[in-house]
Length: 533
Image (cartoon, rainbow, N blue to C red; front, side, top):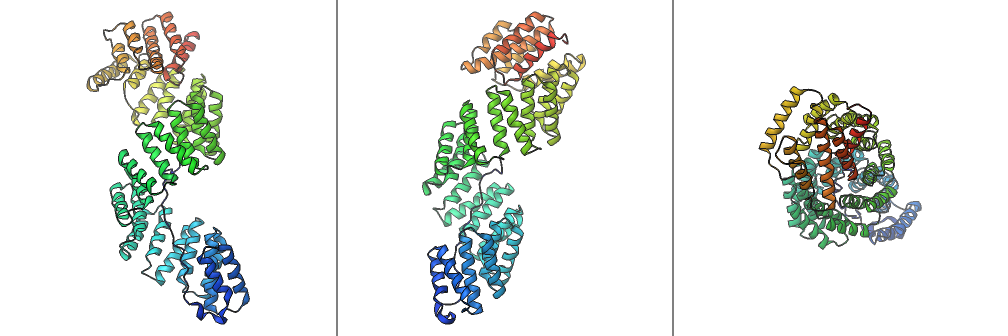
């Protein structure tokens, strides 16, 4: 997802018309210039442009008033979003009056909106040179530094703005955002607190503080702030979207979906709200609805690589492997360094039994991210599924070296490979696994398999009966998929090929195709049929 904190730095520039003379001083009493100013003040920008243009073309204005009129017309263009014309008019105003602070300020704003932050900073520098006490210029220069990810310089500017105006709530809020970007969440919260103290009904400050609480994993406090932001502004789509994220982290997917849906109602083109809703629908197992939401994201943002990737995962969950691969391939076309997409496509290739392509994709994922533990682990599984056990072991160990979760599943798969390669190393890791079990208590179902594998007293039938104690049909199938695979491997260790094949087939019959045990059961049957094990 794109930084995708998906929480912008909110700022408002007051569109104050900076006129340095009264109507009575205007040369020749030209009514068009005065009427243009009045139209600008009532936000009739088209009329303001028309009248200012007429006044400029009249050639009846003094140099000073001509500069003002160019500035006023530039302000109208800016407010219409035509920043190129705004820059042209402000530049003309500056040519006529090189000390025109307002024209530099307005042009700096236009450069900022065009994404030319260096030129924006140059213009704000000039504003500050002309008026060192111009707090808003410091604030806006801080925003430009923020966009350049120069957060220390941004903070310096916001701090100066606050020194000049201790009640400048917006500068506190913007400085809070910079502290947030630097990962200093406590200082960010302090600044948002101050912004809220100064403007208690400041909805963006509540929203932004909520975002920081979310990052600190204080989801209840985050939800409180988002809720307050929504109370203050019932059409605040971003606050609904952000609250949805906190509900999701709390595992309340239904409330998350409600909030994403509300954000979409408020803004039907809110691509990320569709994206987030699709993600939660996937978590709930509603893959069709997830795909619908990702379709909408891609319709709005055709080059959204993450949406293609996530849609691919939903297709994979539906066992539509070819459609999944198409989506991952498109993701990679859009972002050739998208390590997750390579990993995901590798998983699908492995599920299809094309282990060579799987390994190639896991390798590309590692090339994109040399510390990608999950890619090493999945590559180990593909090597294992080909009967290439030494390479599997090397990759399991690389996964561990890169901080892959070392748990019962990890040790079981490592031992299954080691027993075919080195008795010495097998004994070493078996002892390590035994020590791990003794020091890491868990109520997870997998511990039943671990104890059985390490020579526990339960019978085979007891293990299967334990698997059938899952909380629902889905969990029972998942447990049986695992149990049958590991029982099949134990049968192979005991030389009972017929019993092993029976258990592998039973694992496959659960149809839990996203589990590694399902993939490996298919692979073991193939290796047995080919006489490779």
